[in-house]
Image (cartoon, rainbow, N blue to C red; front, side):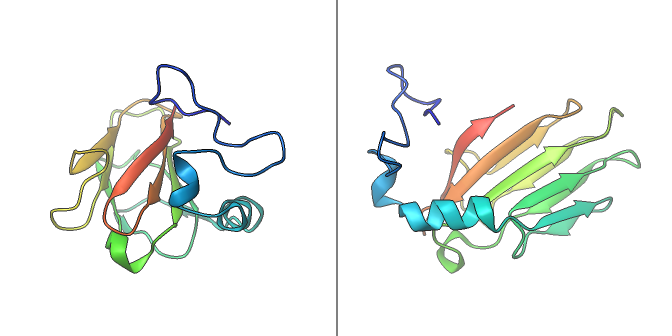
Length: 132
């Protein structure tokens, strides 16, 4: 797995399976493996408040929808992947709680079919790990 934000493409996982900087201070290898191996999937057709699932598949056929994130402080190290699965014109907006941000913006909009964003909480804000 590679960081999309670094021009040097910093590896997130080293050869021993451990996390490499800068991510190791945000969450442990165990947190990452738990998020991957214990993934809960939720399929939604209406606006939704993210909870204990780690993958949220959203069908916005009926119109624009919002996936609201919990406060980052209440879910440190939590990883969410939100994916728009329909091919219609409706958008999926991932909305950070109150004045919190996702890489500096209060929302992230998914408009194309199969567009996705994976984000992690560092306990104070949300950070994008990858997009499709």
